Image (tube, rainbow, N blue to C red; front, side, top):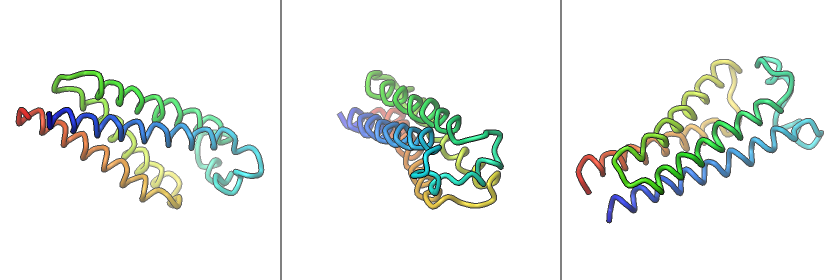
Length: 137
């Protein structure tokens, strides 16, 4: 019973992250309008191999949005000890992408640190589920 609660917490958290990634990715895709130009400055895009924020937005939706949806489905639907794997992989990808963003851009976005915290929480929840399976709860 405890393990089911642990896995559900992780799956719900994955869905939370997926929703945020899709929302932010959609804002990036629409950033060509003046409303979003302040949030995603072109000076940052010039340091990346993209001409605009459309492709990074699409990548955010596909990698982090759909990836976390897959992680949530896998965590919530499967009942064996490897259901935490996809969530842990997504947490690691999220964490390292933020570290690389900091290195490439040489500056931090206002939500970089909160996003780092979200990725660490995802990794910790994945570990919590893993250790629950390991202890046989």
